[in-house]
Each structure stands twice: as C-alpha cells, then as structure tokens.
Length: 495
Image 1 (cartoon, rainbow, N blue to C red):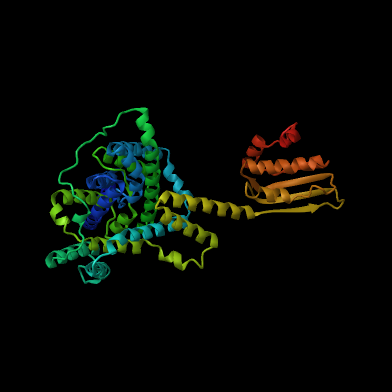
Image 2 (image 1 turned 135 degrees about the vertical axis):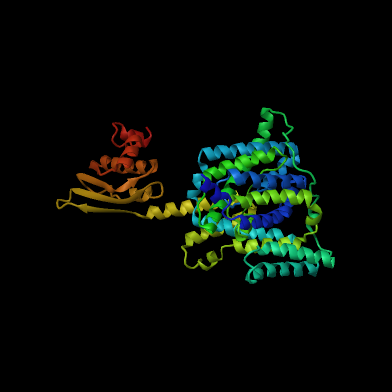
C-alpha cells in the first residue's frame, strides 16, 4: 500500500511540480477561451479546470493525464447556455457526471479495444491540426513583434534542452513563458496578453447548487446535452489515455477513468464550473515537461487556482505569443509524422480510415463524429476482408450421385451470399454432404444462408447431410435455423 502510494504520488516530485506549473500557465488562456466559446464568464472555465484537475488526480485511472475544461465540450454547451442560462449548464454538468460514473460501472471503457490503431492515429493528427488552427487568430492581423516573440519562444523551447546542466532540469516551455514575459514587460511591447482574454477571478470558488426546478421538464431540457457531453468527454478521455499510455509505456484503467471523469464533473458543477474531460494538448505538455504521476495533475490544478487568485496581476502580463509558441510545440509533438511516412507501406484501407477520421474531426470540430466514422469504416473494411477468407471445395464420387462440399472459413453477413453461390442446385444428385468442420457460423444471416442451401437441395429431390458444426455454430443453428423443422419450406418462403 505504502509502496503503491509512493509510486503513484511521490516517484517524480520535482518533475511533476515543474510540469504542473507549465500546464497551469498553459491552462489559463485556454480555460478563458473555452468559457468565451460556451458563452459563460471566464471564471466558470477557470474554476472547472482547477476542480477537475485536482479531483481527477485522486480518482482518475491514468496518472499524469491532465483533465480540465475543453473546447470539444464547450462547443456542445453553446445552445444550452444561450437558451436557458448558466444554471441549466451547471445542472447538465452534474447529470453528465452521473452518466459517466454509470458508464464506468457498466465497463464501457473496455469498448476502447474496438478502436483500431488507424482511428487513434487519425484522432491524434486531427487534434494536432485543431490545436494549431486554434492559434491562428493570435497570429493574424498582428504586428511583427508577435511573430518575432513566437519564433523566439519556439527557439527557446527546442534549443534550451541542449544547454549544459540546466537544460534537462527545467522544462523549456516554462523557460519560454518566463523569458518572453520578462522581455515584453521590460521593453514595454504593445502586444496581446493573457489579461486581454478576459477578467480573472479574484476569489476562491464556493459551493453552488444549480438554481433550477427539480422537475421532469428540467430533465428533458438538460438530458440531451448531458448525454452528448458524457459521450464526447469519455471518448476524448479514453483516446487521450491511450495516447499517454503509449507515450509513457504504461497501462491505465479505462473504466476507473470513466468513473473519475464523472466524479470530477460533479465536483465542478457544484462549485460553478462547466463540464470537462481529458486534454490531449495539456497531457502532452505535462509528459514532455517531465510529469508522470498523479502529483503533476494535482499540482497543475492547485497552481492554476493560486496563480489566478493571488498572482493575477502578474499573469495578466504573460504575452499570448509565449503560450502560442507552447501550443505550436504541442501540435508539432502531437502529430504522428510516422503516419505520413507509412502511407506507402500501410494497406489502403488503413490509410483511408486514418484520413477519414482526420477530415471528419477537422471539418466538424467534433471528436465523436470523427471517431465514429473511423470505427465504422474500420469495421466495414474488416468485415469485407474476413468475408474473403472463406473457401468451398467439392468432390463428386465415382458414381456421380454424391457430392461432398467442404466449407473453410467464417460465414456471416458479409460472406453469406458467397456461401450460397458456391453450391450448384441444378446438378442431378442423390445426396449432398456439407462438411462444416473447418467453418464457423457467426450470425442469423449465416444460419439463413445454410437454411436456403439445404432447402433448395431438398426441393430438387436431393438428400442433404450437414456434418461437423462446432458447438458454438450448432447452438446458433439449432436456435434460429429452420431446415430441420417439419415446416421448413413454408417458414423459409414466408407462407
């Protein structure tokens, strides 16, 4: 128990605390921006980011992953806030948390095994593109100073690690933010700062129960939004957890993460915060800055609140160019450049799934749509490929009266037509044997195909013997098949 506690909390104290500071600084403008997208006061996003990051440190299933207010979630809240106001958003956040906890107990996190590697790659690449696109407003219609500061920031981020001794000790994104802030303040540059994004709160959050009537009408209003928030939040969190698993060569408990995200969102709603989920950009900043354990997420949340409430005057001076440089570094580091190099090596179907996932996510700005499109395409390609792995050979006896068909492979909805087409029903035979020792029947479409074959032969006056069904196939054929029932032909023809 004590060893586990040390491992998950105290195994990397310096790295986690420094990474937490970097993440907290990068969270501030994003939380404000997401609040503006959702149409609420900046403090709603800032309080949510603090609360979710702290709570998830204790109850989440993936150490080192950062969860807070996100753009994907903010986009889903716009209509609710516009039509019904903040109080209904807080109520929807609470219900979202409840739904996510239920998903955890139903073990829906395990469904991640159905998401193929090409979908994950497409998701990562799309997020990298979206993160970069989100920085463009800060780089358009601005003075040359902004471009110079951004370029200098990227130079610091990529070159500082090569400085002897201290290069590996201090995260370069933190150095970038401190140096560029000092330069901007000393020179007096007239460029956009964090303070221009919105008013920072100057008080600690308080307990706040949503002021909405507890009626069925309220439930009808918030449930569609809560369900959408729960699905998108869990999807982004599960995908981010998978990516951080790869980055750190460790595994995580996806079902515990579902429950943890739910608890964090309930806590957020109770202090006046919006719903949130895992953030791939901040999680990568955390990992690249040396954050590994739960302490990094806790430190990010605590430093965020302390800085916003007590160091607001200093934070307002941070130039947005410094944070843009950090986020460009994140987008470059997030994008899977190997996926471009592997386009020639990988199968066409894999490339199509990856590209479609990227295009749909970038076009809709909705991660759920992109992942759903990718998963459906991957499933179709897989079904088509497996459907081809079925072969039927036959052997006619010397007398020319008995033909044996040997079926090898998987019979299901994709290969059922091919299965039926392999039999010659017009051949004059006394007996047909269908050997299924090396075949497997998966669904009722396959059973219907077997029924059709057997009954068509019998209708031609041919005796049919079916051999070798394995136990699983025999169970489904016995349950749904009709060829051995007295009124088989009538049932099949629908009379």
